[in-house]
Image (tube, rainbow, N blue to C red):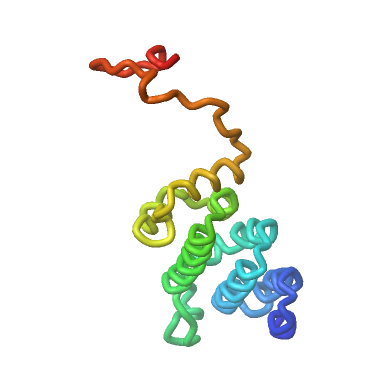
Length: 170
C-alpha cells in the first residue's frame, strides 16, 4: 500500500483499502483512505473518487470499538478524519472555482454528494467572486454549451412601464 502511494498508483492504492480494512481494522483504514482521497483529488480521477467516497462513508461515520480508541492507537478520531476529508474536498472545490471550471465543479460536487450551494456561499468573497462579468459570461456559455443570443434588444426598444414584461420587448 505504501509503495503504491509513494509511486502515485492511486487505483492500486485504493484497491488495497479493503485488504487494510480486513487486516488492520477501521482506524488504520480511515487514515489510509484519507491519503488515497488526497491523491485521488490531485489526479482528478472522478470515477475513482465516486467509488472512494462510497467506501469511505461508513468508515468515517463508524463508531469506534473500545480497542480502536484514539488514546490506544494514537490515530485520529473519526471526527478529525471527517474534518480532514471535508477540508480536502473544500480545497478541491475552491481550486476548481478559482480556475473558472464551473462544469467540473458541479460534476465534482455531484460525485462527492455535496451541495454546490454550500461551497459557493463559503467562497462567495474568495474563489467564487465574480470580478470580470464578461469573462464569467463567456465561461458559462462555453462550458455549458449555451449559445449566445442572436440579437439583444436595444434599450430604446423597451417601453418602460410599471412592470416590465417579455412582451414589451420587440
